[in-house]
Length: 84
Image (cartoon, rainbow, N blue to C red):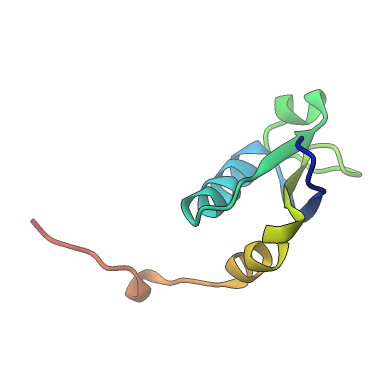
């Protein structure tokens, strides 16, 4: 990673979930990296005894902000839908 300490902010079940979460963090300007076992990628979103688990890391200085973002919940009414 880099000189800064990277910390785990989330453990996702499967690569699809991890990519969505990572994208959300990166949209907010937070660098994010993934760590996973190769067999976990093959298993899609299977999570048996950690198999398929993807750890999401961010630099320590971003950890609190990342955790705050990940605790936010949205529903359809929160989104700004524009009809064109």
